[in-house]
Structure formats: structure tokens, C-alpha cells
Image (cartoon, rainbow, N blue to C red; front, side, top):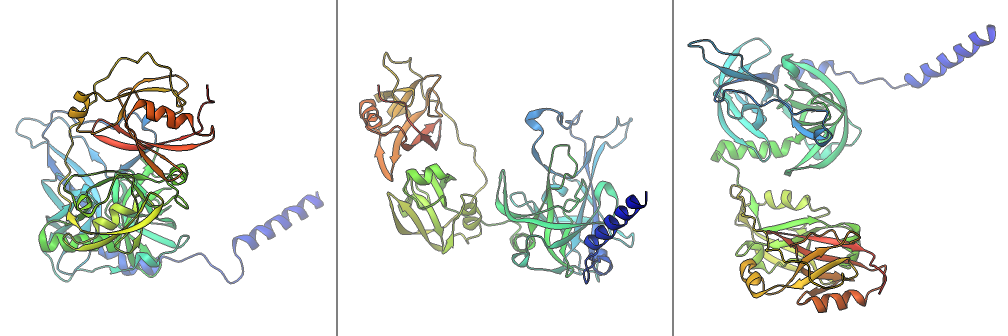
Length: 476
């Protein structure tokens, strides 16, 4: 028994030493909250019911919707209104005061479609707010209340943030006003699906419905981000939170205040990520840049001479390490300005000049499916697919000078293509070959080593993409 007591004492002593190392203490957030908390506001909105029913949240147990990004603001379905009652749906969010005369920064989705916006301060004063402007692409909104002498936040520099650094969020999760949570910076420059223009700050700060639009502070009491999204299997916090860098949010609000909208640059290309296999096929030293799938006719990129299969590695002096970098860099470039663009083309780098255009509202392109043909009475090639030359009618319909249509895909096919896809080019060891006939294509494949890595430019409907194939079937 004495031995057991001694062992327990030793373990407790070691744990105490690990938990409280000499000369180090856990951070104290009290001063930060006392100085900055008063500038954080609670935002509630009301929207007149326009439907007889409100869509419910999908079944979270469904495997197809377990992983998703949520805007975290709760919307409560209205009850059954009685005769003469005004049916409303209400939502809660957060925001913070950026100027003493009542300008408040929040998320665009907090005030989206709201007929009435109410702002409550920590001293219980309440105001009606009006929308100055909102930008859905970055999820930033600027609202205004008629007040003066308001407490304001201090702004920080997100570029100085370090991964592992302590950060603090203040907001109204589930309507609990001025709730303080803390954590660390988990990563910087995160790209999220469908969010091409924001390099998010990822943290493990507890964020829940109602925190939307609230500030993210560093330990100096400076705002470094606007809390915007969470990654969740359940709709609640699971350790992955994302904030919009404050420098980007401030640039957006400035444009909203001055012009009521945000101007962004565009060049008119469709791009995809450069994988390791694609880099090998194109003769690039390592996976980097943005691979151009297609170029919009008459766009700035088209006028500058950018071609499909080019890999954009630098734009306006800034490196493009990932395809997600390009929309952010181009979007932040002033429309009408001149820019230098570096591309990797057929094994060599070259520099082009262009004038940046302006991004307009999103357009939905019509999608036409190429006419399918019955599988030809031919053996599959070394990719396990059967291809045929495009007919004159198909070339006219798809406005193509050449290409091969996939007419059959065997079960053991090595290329991820479908019947009806059109193959435009093949890339191998940095060499680009236009595909003009089935005979030409099959001969090219027949001459390759079984371990060859090739890339195909594939058109499907109105879209094009690059498909990499590693390894071919043995020669027959």
C-alpha cells in the first residue's frame, strides 16, 4: 500500500510539472474582453414569410451530407400565424463596430433577405440598422445605425498571424450575447469549396450558430478576422472554424461604402489544380500553378494569347502555387490595370501581358451533350476505350476543328472518361499533340511504355478538363 501511495505521489508531481512549467502561464483574456467586448454587437433580423412552409435541414445521418460547410446562423421556422398576424422568420448573428458613427461589419448571410435588422449593444441600447452593402462572394456586409460616440475595435494585420497563436472570438452563439471563446490559429490561407476569393484563417475556436459576423481577435486585442463558417458533421462546432481575414473584409467594406458594390478583376479562363501526375505530363518541375482548361473567346486571356494547356505560374509578380491562388490574385487586381502573366507552355516558361477585365455577375452556361454514337466494331485501345473521329455534323455542333469522341468504355478502362466525351489533346513528357484521328491516337498509345504517364484534354458538354492516366495495358 505504501508503494502504491508513493507511485501516485510521483505521478501527480510529474503531471503538475507538465501542466504548469516554470515561468509559463496560460493566457489571460480578461483585459482583451474588457477593452474590446463593448464594440461587439448582437444582430437579429426579421423576414416576412413568403412561403407556406420552410425547408428543413437535411438528414445529418445521410453519408452524402455528413461533410459540408455551413453558414452558422440559425433560422427558426415561423409558427402558424393567426388571422391578421404578421408571419416572420427570425435569425441571430453578430457584428462589430468599426467607426464611432455607427458603421458595423458583419457577414452577408446574416442580413441576407432581411426586411428588418435590429442591433443590440452591450449596454442594452437597441437600434434599427440599414444595409450599406453586401458582397456574397466574400460573405462581408456593412450596415449602419444612427448613433455616435460608439466604442470601436482596433484592427490588426492578418499577415502577422502565426499558426499556433492564441486567438479569441466574441459573439452571440444561439443568442447568448457577448460569449467569449478562445483557441489557436490552426492554418492560414485555407481554400474552401465554392469560396474562390477568400484565403480563410482556420482556427479551433468554438464557433456556433449566432457567431456569424463576430470578430476574431489576436492577443493584442486587434481584430484579425470575421468569423464566417464552420466545418461540421452535425451543424454544431467540431473544432474547425474559418474566418475572413480582416484586411480583405475592410477592403470590401470600403468599396461598399464608396460605390455600393465590389469591383473584381477577371481574365476569362477555366482552370484546375496541377497534380503530381499532371506536372510530370507537362514537364513541370513540381506540382504548382493553375492549369488552363479553356479560354473564353474575346476575354483578356484570349487577347493576351493564353492557350488551353498553359499552366499559369505567376500573375502580376505574385506566385501561383495552387489553382486556388489565381482567382484571389486576379479578383484583387483593379479592373483595367495591366498585368504580366507567366505561363508554362510546352516545356518552357514565357511571359505575356494583358489588361484585366471586370468580373460580372455569374452566368450559367448552357450545357449541350455531344450526340452519342453506337460502339464501333473496333477493339479497345490501350486505355480500354474505343474512340471515333468526329463527324462533320458533330464538329459543326460543337464548333471544333478536330477531336475524337469516346464511343465505348470497357470495364477495365484506365482513363476516367465517359461515352460522349470528346478527346482534344494528349500530353506526354511535355509534348502536346492535337488528336486528329482515332488511328493517330491509337498509334501514339501503342508506341508508349506500359508505365507511361499521359494527360488527356477532355471536353464534356461545354466544359473541359484534364484527365491523367498512369500506366497502360500491355501491348496486344
